[in-house]
Length: 174
Image 1 (tube, rainbow, N blue to C red):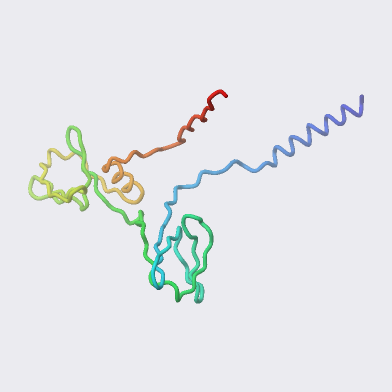
Image 2: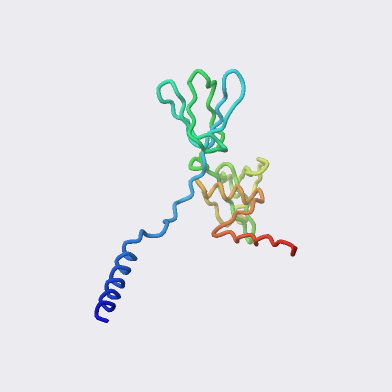
């Protein structure tokens, strides 16, 4: 009986020590958009890279899409490397909010001329003259915030948080 109590005490001590040494859960990483490059090949054809290709000596090194494997191409086989995605950190747009409700996006900062604001719309690029009394607020948006506003303006639904799992398919009875 004394040995089983001692064994139980060691087991409790050992299990609490092991639980204390478990690594912390995964930490949330900020969203990093994928930077895609098109690599035009000699004589014809192209491939896509999911990161910026790096020239190491006489060889281009990159991760190819869609396989995401590391590839090496001789410099002589590459005609041109072109970035295909935008740099979101350089995005700048302006949100103009109106009284009592409503808003629009503008490419350039609205200019005040007399008692009006002249606004170049983001969608379509049309010029619009709006009375100062009708403008509630003008906000400068940059980076991912600007990208999100553009997507919302286009009608894209942005999902935040966890996406619900699809139900498991059911098999018909056999």
